Image (cartoon, rainbow, N blue to C red):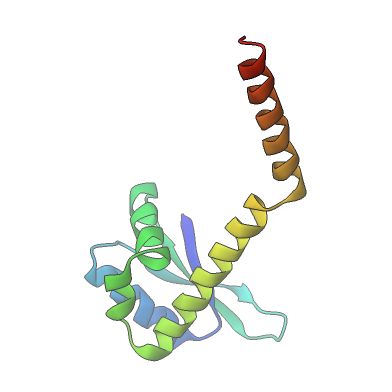
Length: 116
């Protein structure tokens, strides 16, 4: 099972699941334990990797999919997209990656200068 989306609102999970199904993704809503506040957590899962990849594409990048959603649910998906973008931005601007990029640039320049 491939987990796609977690929420504490059952109606939102059902609505998002039906929207994914309208776009050809075979997904299921499961109860996945309790939140720290004691409310049940509902997860949307896909049984196959290819369908999970398609569902992630729909959730994270497809504009037509988000335009097809109810505004309340579209807001949650936009928050998910912002979080995903923030993680990528933090990764690309991390200190380790900047040091690695600087070292690669120095090696490339040395190779160019010394014609290696």
